[in-house]
Length: 338
Image (tube, rainbow, N blue to C red; front, side, top):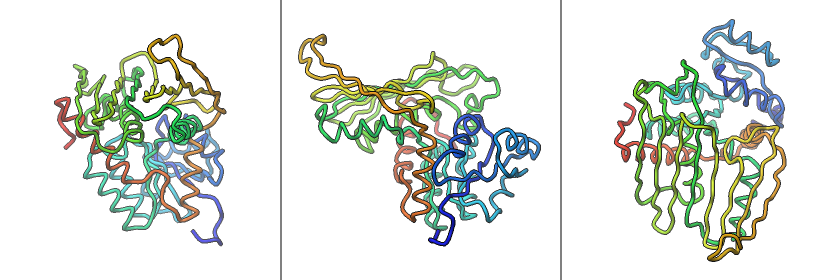
């Protein structure tokens, strides 16, 4: 966009998924440099219902109709996982900037095709890892840069919840269901961000749902040589979201590392100085400001669109993420998507 154009990105939401209704639509209404203009559904009555409920000016009865509209600058894609690649590529081909839900794609080949479409049509694409824009993670990055806990030697993550909706696409193999794709991708992204893009080796195991055939719980160990990461992600356990980053001189944890609500304050805790006795550890807890990480993500993306700069989270990271997800599936003895 040039300086003569409005300094706000006009957004369309390509689908009516729960995450769009609960998180992204409210965020787009309030995010700086963002203007929510339209929503699309394969059912025009559904689009109109959601538009009326959330005060969205326009409703489209097909995804194609929205992508053909010249007044839409960017689209958010909250569709089931198997539809991320085809609709993101179609949106890029329509010269719309795209913020796509995680995982960006199901395979490395699809991610590379998304990157190629972005480059060919000169528009931005970004995977929606909203947690990376929360002030808690800004604080952790600064603490690590300041050598607050020394060199990282271990990262431990737990991300579990219960998926109980019978029609949930997460329980279907063909739609890219399973715990690793749904919430394990957050753990993989965090491990890669903290320790490096490619572990030397991976070990993994999964509990497969007897009815669904998808991984209901997935656990992995990532070997980085001089550091290790481990995580468990699950769709069948009591909700618990934790991360502990262990360094040579202490540890850091975030109370709500991935899914902190927009109306809820969280904390970053640092433990240091215990040496051989844990009760001697000095623990400091830092209070984080209340923040809408979805809104911060939307504004960061809009800033890049309006400023003509690269996406805040590069597509190369998303390709590497999917490549590591594929390694983990293989390590657990699971078949990769076709």
